[in-house]
Image (cartoon, rainbow, N blue to C red; front, top):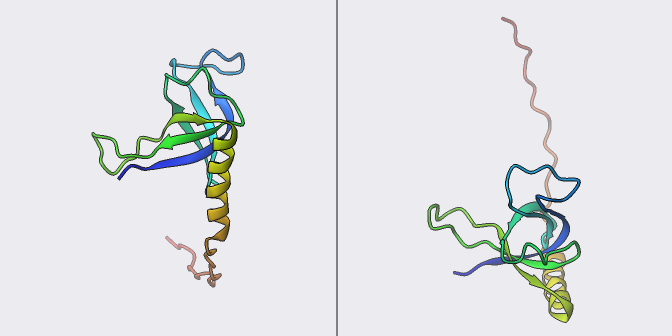
Length: 116
């Protein structure tokens, strides 16, 4: 199965930015995903110069060849214009329609103090 996550770029961390001290030459993006998570992802070097805050991106969540249960989690595409808006709106609409999980509050468990 091929699997990608859309997200909205909040910030880009480039190694040569004035406000970034970097130990390597890679670029990362702080991204809000369609399901309201905030995660920092690696950016594919082929698009690292074009990515900017506000972009809608696709993140590769396919398994790595070395660890089949671990996703790649790398930004591989930048969507712009109508395509970006439609993609973001479709996922956000789906997310809002999903049933919300109701968590019942639990009574605190009494633990006697340690006497040693």
